[in-house]
Length: 231
Image 1 (spheres, rainbow, N blue to C red):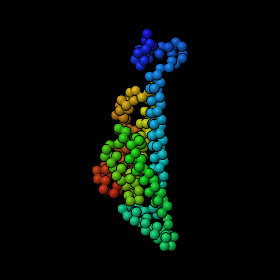
Image 2: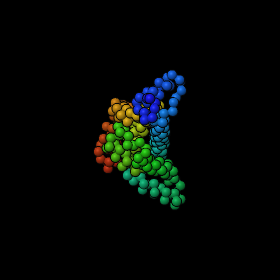
Image 3: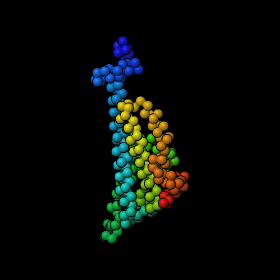
Image 4: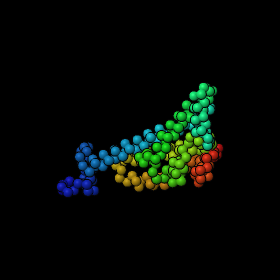
């Protein structure tokens, strides 16, 4: 009958299984449903990984912000040259030039790692609604670092922080959908609607002010990001 051969995967088949659950309190083994739940579990793991990665990026941004505020860290167009000059001076015996070298080297390590994450297709950067194409190109072309002005670094870090905060919020919403429905069926449509109703400016209230401050820099990345966020 309904549960007979040739009926697996049909709406009638699944409804009959649900009726059996209601009557017996047991869960019949439905290969279609089992496969669907396994796929949902795998997708949930991926979302969890992306949430962890975004949280790690947020921690790195906090660390980067602290390092850039350290005394002696060179910043600006000549930042790399000044760092090399300080290294050379220390090698020649001028120990007073040592200040800021370790912090600057740590900054370079962190920003290099961030640049790789931005370009990683598995990192969630392609998530619709998270960033405009202009924002993404901007962040990929001028990461924060010692060759940027202090004002530019603050702006870039704020943009990156907001991006990661939005990624966490969106991935958590997708994870809630899977946990509630135990399937990825309808997830794409649900998240497209959720992102349309919840743009970054709504999830991250500071984003509008940051975008306004960043607009001249995003329009011309060759400008040394010498803008600050209002307020």
